[in-house]
Image (cartoon, rainbow, N blue to C red; front, side, top):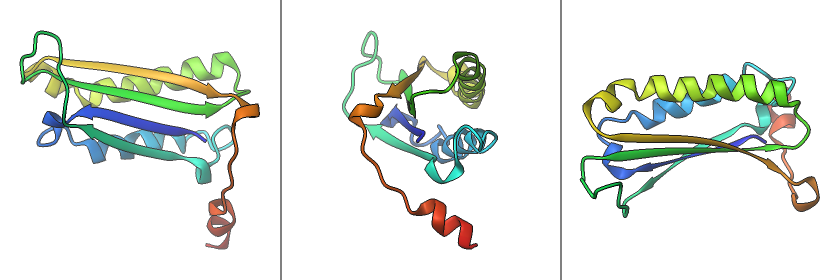
Length: 129
């Protein structure tokens, strides 16, 4: 963990620079390797081609970022860290938001440790480099 999913309306494909946003979010997570080990970082995007936004104007767009993290990070750390992640996301879309109606949401969920199973050999392979 963490896993961040950027869901966005497909009308952002031409101008939203989604891959660049993913790189920015992943880079932010790498600033806290003691809290979020680099080998566990997963940032991905899912374009949504069927949607209705607000009044149905096809120029409107949306971005929803959901980050799922393991439980146990202190609340004050989460607030500071994810406020910065939010700021990165909003800044990324500043020009897009000035051009069209754009809704941005950002949520953080904590995984229930009793309801999570995982394995990850990435840490071992990163150590070999």
